Length: 383
Image (cartoon, rainbow, N blue to C red; front, side):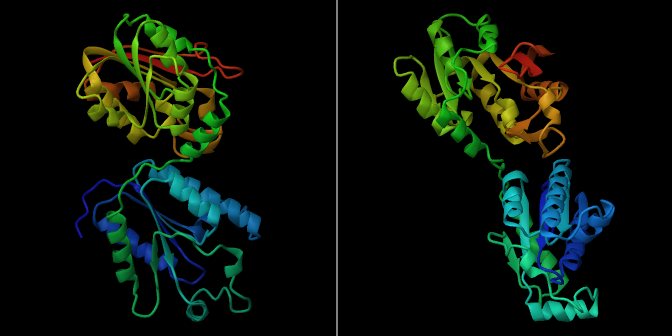
């Protein structure tokens, strides 16, 4: 086995008590380390002790502790590790949470009959000598990525190799992180502000009548319509079908062309015509880093030589960066998913793609809405 792809993520080996989780996980860890990967190995029983045995064994405590396990796995995986965890932790909500929030994750269920598990427990841990197995305290996995019948001729080495083979052939997808569900509800309620943003007024000072711009992540269309009313030719795109449907219904008489999809889909649609400017407000922090990289790259391709990109996003120094459920060092879920941007690293990514950063400012007081006064980063860069 010769795996060279840099693939951070999660391998969760689950199963009822005495199904062989720890044994198989240790073998998976060993073989991946042999291949040169950065591995962090976690065991559910050991983590209880690491956390000071502060959780009990009733269902509520088991669910809370399981949630902590996988928030930790998410955090570690985001640092560039393959995290291998052996833990029962089989709850429907958690299976879904992992699928939604941890990219490149593989959930492996070790399916072992009760009588076989009873024999194993009697020979090893002897936890259930005088009591029944606790299978009824967990949910039977509904959608595991892989099921292994870990008994009979299935030995740990074979099981581990099959798991690694499946993991290495995962098609890496950016998790949705419940964004589609959130924005569908948001635009269905039509609660977004209708007055154009202060950033649009900031950006238009650099534009000229008759120029052609693209707004990425147009939302309810308020800034796109503002630009069009100022004599600018506007294309606007959003990955939310509900947002685009709202715009098409609301702005029937506007000159804006609204598109559903992602920016890279416009490279073909636009027939190689280039934009004078690209405008993107409060979008970068609403997407994982992989999508940001794709957006920056496609923007560069779609701009004319000398064209500008205008970007506004929430900074890592925004107060919301310290609220909500932790996904990684820069990602939180507070109401909905956000990834808070580190200014210096953001500038480096723009320069690496070929942009020249003309200005980058980090400030509050410029994007207030209700009680929210975010710390934002405002960037102007040219191709």
